[in-house]
Amino acid sequence: MRNIIMIILLLSLNACHLFKENGIEFTIENKSDSPIEKVKFSTSEKLAFMKFDKIEPNQSIVDFLSMTNNKNDGSYTLEFTRANGIKESKRFGYYTNGGSLDRWVEFKIKNDTITRKFSGPEY
Image (cartoon, rainbow, N blue to C red; front, side):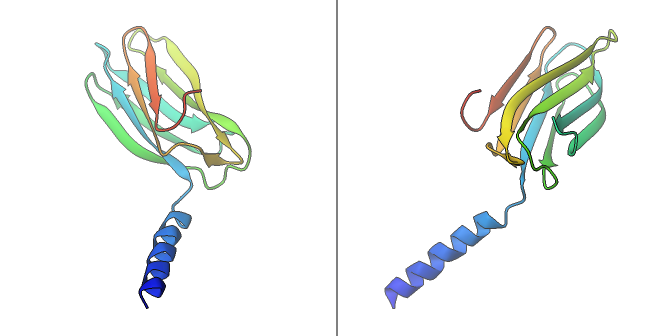
């Protein structure tokens, strides 16, 4: 009887993982001195994206990028416009067969650079 309960428990925990939506949680933190505008986080397939009008200095956005329609290998793209009008577009990370290899990614936008940290291996 004890073994049956353990098997049911393990199957239940595994089933929760199976039904998790395909995608990646992301944080974009503006650590620069000026607001950034027209912020877009997307997959390189351009099938999944999230847009934000503006992120003020020292403000963070946390959201989830659903990748249910993605089917191929690709990377993530972060695009935005700085206060001086300069457009930035950078590719980061990797996903395979339309599925994220990481649970989350954290971007920090600074005056002169963009840093990123993924939950998984470095690329």
